[in-house]
Amino acid sequence: MTGLEKRLIEETRDLIASTGLKAKPSRRVKSPDEPVDASLQIALSADEMTATATFYPPRGTGEALSTDTVYELLAAVGVVHGIDRDGLETAVYTCNTERSALYSVEVARGTAPSDAIHERLELVPRQEEAPVDEKGRLDHRSRTTLPLVKAGDVLARVIPASPGRRGTTVTGTELPYRTRRTAGLLPGSNTALEDGELRAVVDGLMHVDGRTVTVAPTLVVEGNVDYHTGNIVFDGDVVLQRRVSDGFTIECGGMLYAASTLDAYGVSCAKLVARQGIIGHNDSVTRVDGPVTARFVQNARLEAEGAVSISASVLSSHLTSADQIELGPGSTVVGSTLRAQAGINACNIGAPGAAATEIVLGIDFRVDARLATIRDQTVALTEKLTQVRLALRHGARNRQSLEKLESGLEAAIATLTNEAGELVSRLDRHDEAQLLVRGTVHEGTYVEICHRSYLVERTASRCRFRIDKSRGVVTMESLANARERGTDG
Image 1 (cartoon, rainbow, N blue to C red):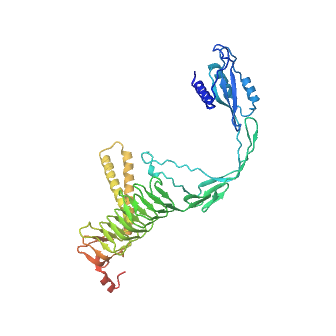
Image 2: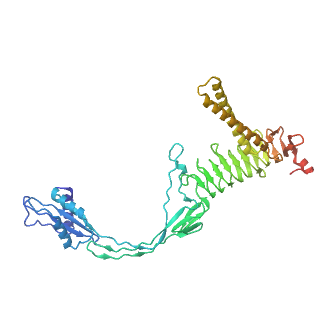
Image 3: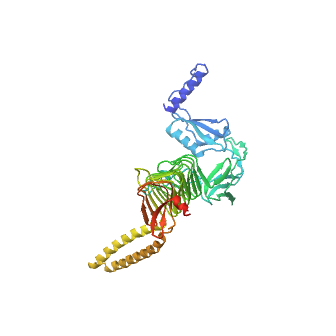
């Protein structure tokens, strides 16, 4: 007995038992050797959308089931649409050859009606490439769920209206279709609908507020910068409401505003406002193309093209400004290096027993960096030139190639030397730069203005450091004396 037959017997017994009647054996029970013809039972679903059949195989020398008989029986119960002819014929063949019953085989399925839908605007699915690091591994920090878009990106497309289509039951009854009005999307700010496509007009963050699609030129990150957001790469302004998780970087083409303390694992922006302060991590560099405003800077390396304004403290940090550095009332600088092209206005510098602070002024730090690069490149080229000339002196076989290399090295060194000569004249750009100390500068502080140095040997208060052009040295004078002479700046 097959599993299906066993289940049929059990279900039938349960059904009879539920009636409260006792099953009585039929008066005549066919002998197992008596031939029985194959048979078929057909059932329709309540909605007449499907027709199922149960196939009973022949027994003994009973007559097998023919497909023609099946089609006749289907027609007899009114099944005329959606007949699965291949499936039906396979079931007949299996039933006859394997002599096994097949229960509830779907032999026909109706066609459901298709709704008529009006024209609508639908979002275009966004496909982001999985970022990989330099070793080809998936970079999870660079993955983001933020829908950042570029100007010109297609955000949504107009889907044409689709006509409705009537349905049909397996018995041939026609089913009407409905007309469905969908609440399509609407163009919002910084988007434009043209030629059936909704495009972004500016770089920004795409929002779908209700039905309206907009692009915000400012990215507001309400949670932490973490695996949910990925590394932030955005061409506009970025507002951080909370913290930056370990190792996540930020790159934005506009202003970066941090409402909480900015954990700098790698920051690049056009302007920086750190309302609480900046904490550097892992020797990372914070690069700003414009001004910087922060409450404090700690263990950070900050390089800014604009002015830097710190209201509270600078601790164990390295600050560089192509403009000037302004420190607020009561502020303190301890164990740090401050470099400013136009000058520094400070309050308190250093502390008893603390690591010394270094102040460097008046230098074009971009020129200084380029000169350092030229120096390193010149040293490397000169070493290689020495090796080539030594090989030529000892009769190398590849003489012609080595002579070409020698000429190329000499030319490269000459080019770098000329560039360095031109840059040196631009290095000391601001001999008017000065360090103004409104509070106390502690002994051990090193001050350098246009490559002229001064070491503070005794703690002093309310003083100014500048170049005495008549003597070509850095001098320190009290602010009271400077005001008397009318040179307090």
